[in-house]
Image 1 (cartoon, rainbow, N blue to C red):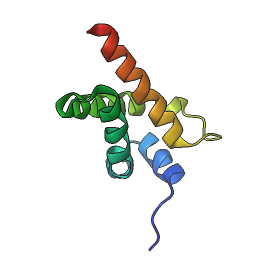
Image 2 (image 1 turned 180 degrees about the vertical axis):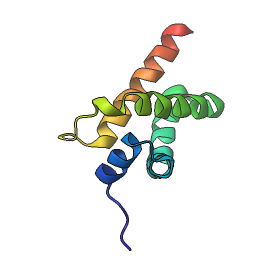
Image 3 (image 1 turned 90 degrees about the vertical axis):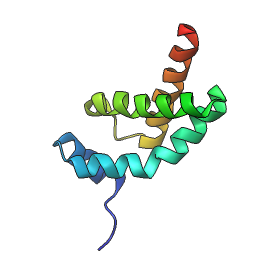
Length: 89
């Protein structure tokens, strides 16, 4: 059986499919973590900010425009989350 596309997983996640949500996190977690780590230079903070980024993404999932790459949208959320983090410091 072939892997579901990211678009299919997003649709399932929007229908409250927890397995789809977990699969999306699994596919993108390392990329987002490494991106965030490059910005904050602290592993513990990067882990927290990565988790926060996914939470924010899934709260806003219904606003995702499928004309664009999901990864780009996710990176933007992570970058904004880091910027907010620096502002708070």
